Image (cartoon, rainbow over all chains, first blue to last red; front, side, top):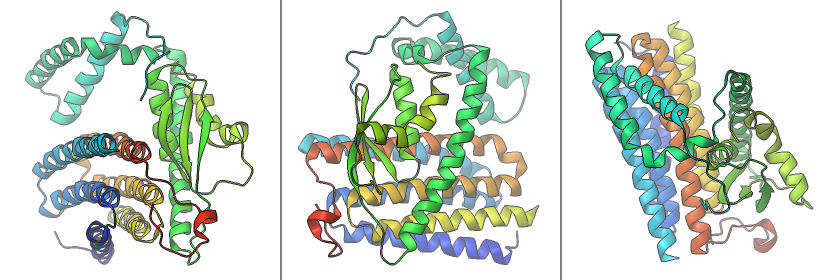
Length: 87
Length: 175
Length: 105
């Protein structure tokens, strides 16, 4: 499908959000900061997959988004448990 | 989340039925059509899931399952959505203002909700509302990180400011 | 219809961006969690609504994804925050740092 101007703007904003989250992921400075950044990035990726489904017109990616979101949550809880254990 | 000193009544048939209908509804949403074959498969799968989760069914005993609980539920959802939008506008204002207006503190708030499920929903709501983040739940006391804590707050004023608007609706459908 | 959908998409993307900016600008990890969780949750929901308006046939799966994000995102954030507090990471406060800017732990 052809994109409207607003849709291109939305994609640009989302891309900037991904870049900023990545920046926090790289900068740190502590492990918890990186975990938070990764968590945020995971949610952005989930909605990003939904947008990808819309761009490609294929509902198959919705299932991918669903599973990705679930696994990201499980991963975050697992990492949180690890941090708690080390404390 | 600590669970001691919380009374856990035995889950009854109605809780099992509730979970069954919930799982079945989820199945139908995922399938996305009303084929007879899909519905039959969903009925079987939902039954298996419900039976398999019997040991964990007690979390649902906090739920008040009655028609009278419907109105508080809708009111709660309304309050929640308004609070979520407010929270985001508030956060956007803070993040974008050059001076970064913050006055963070970890405060305690009290809840009258007794069931683990009620406290879970309350904690989740607090996390998504303006400037607050639930850090821990210890029995009836919730630890909350507050971005803009007014100086001189005590337990009563923070409870009033953070939990009361949710709790008045929540107590209509969870214990 | 397409215009309303596009507006939802732009607003959603903007909130997501605000959350990411908060992630960069906030002085400590607790405030970063706050900014990240809230803005990204509402941002994602707006994006999902926008897509649902573009592709009405997908509503059921989008609803499931929306509810999933709405439940798991705050839960995950609370779990991280609790782990941090238990691990002894002290929240930043203006009084102790005399607002000198970036300060961790």
